[in-house]
Length: 341
Image (cartoon, rainbow, N blue to C red; front, side, top):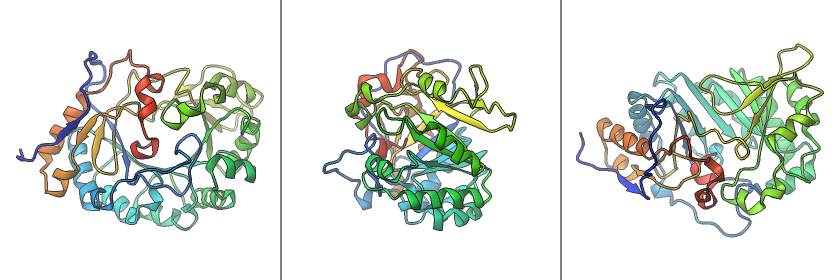
């Protein structure tokens, strides 16, 4: 094992560990904390601090880290941000990660730059993509994203649907008084493109806590608004594909709608994810800031054994099934763009 030792930041959880989840299977890589939008539920409106360019992981460092994580049991990788399409070498990174024998390689984006990049990302080996789409009304979209261009995002979504990805989904954070009257229209629009819409509860992470519970529309209320389109029942999750619950269309077409209830129905039990910040901190939970800093040792040439050891330390900090995820007080201090949503 390398003599280069990772540094733990924060206090290790004293909560008992869950025996049924013995190792991480998925990791989310926040390749940059930069974003070209400032969504009201994610980024503060005022000044912010950013990771220094010299501290951000480059393609070689990301590849070394993910190679070590896959050797330690990771099978699924999702690239996030910030806005990952701002990462200068993103296509090259996807090419490198696609050679590591992963079961899945996906990306979440705000879509603004996807129109010109979708085909290149698909050719590089990206399998699936999620596009944020919070409104189909340009003024509402601009207000929720603080200046985002809906036309560019719709163009990006269309480009993704035409690029031949295995799957395209959209993510809509539903806010009371903003876009909660658009669920039907968004569903029909996304279905017409051959993609799958998903609706998310506002979570109490960072700026989501600032907006408050009054802005939240529960997943149950979202389902009720779409009941005329969807089959009855509780729906089902996809195996090893995250917390979303999907219901099928009543018309028998096989189309679906996904719901993510991150506040009213926390999904910590069974969580198999790790997260990595853009400066190389391995975190066990979206609702916590503690983690294992491996960025420095990566830049100094850490070996696989050291990185796998860091993964085990980070995983040991995973809270147990009694943890209430983004409803916990610690979630308020988390930066969504830094950790990766």
